[in-house]
Image (cartoon, rainbow, N blue to C red; front, side, top):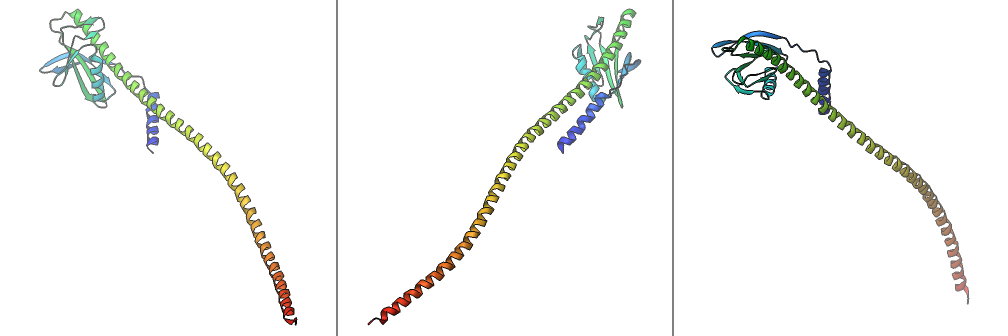
Length: 233
């Protein structure tokens, strides 16, 4: 029963994997409040739970920057992005649950930066959001593949077990059939022995009766001889 439930789950996983739809990587301009200040930034919607998206976003960014968890946001320092690396400028990260989607937002404090740099940062942030979303979808597909491969291993192991069981059952059947033939032979031999013994018992009874009669005849002869002995003077 447990195996059947696992196989059902495996087909659901594989079915979901084969029906993957094209993902939406649309990025939107959006302002967010960090503490008491509103910052301009960009957001992207990801089709996933906030816990899964948060874990994957953190896993992705920690390889490229220094992250610090704040009360309701993250500060991202020294983020390495395409064509730019911000060493001292802090980028803000917020992740909000917009069930069934999750919104990932990146913004930066642009005060003191030249407009050309701001434009470059804006472009880099938008690309980074797409990379974050893509990393999430890739990770989810990798998990589905791993689950499907695990299911395949279980099915393959069960198949091998059934094949081994078939070999054992076939061997047992052959042994049982050979034993059946042997027992049938013994049974026939036993039946013949019984018939022979029955006949011997009949013959023995006949022989006993014949011997008894012969004995009676001999005893009469003896009695006759004894009587003649008494008659001799």
